[in-house]
Length: 195
Image 1 (cartoon, rainbow, N blue to C red):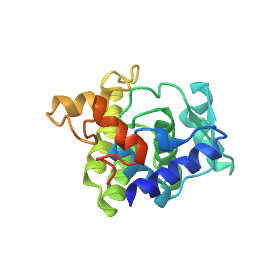
Image 2: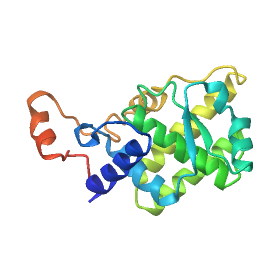
Image 3: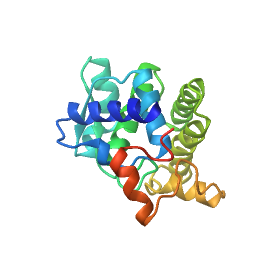
């Protein structure tokens, strides 16, 4: 059930962005499919994708939200994340900033921790404990890194995956698919981690 519903939501997201892609040919981690389900259940605020991170600075997000305008979502640094691709990372960013806006949660360290708790509560409410753990590490973990460097550095986009691996949780969100094992899954549109 999760595969078709989540893939349909991700396809709708891609179509809404005007992207000419067929997400049925994409491989998404289990946590990404869960994330799409939770994000759309929560409700995303209106947004626009921007290439310039300066246009999506935290103050601009708040300003746009306060003026009932679509919030800017930065498209950069979206490769190599836990979500399995740029499109999925953009969806996570929209969900994340939707939490900031709808819950009036700030963008400093405490606000990011509050946002991480909202992510976790939403994931747990839908029975996705693994997604809840990934969201905590992705949001609160990265914010803590940023804070620890005096606010001058952000962790690499691979931070969450690297930290999960370091904790011995190599398979969180993924089931290995290799070589010839991959073909049948692409043909029928299902994957062993799709639910």
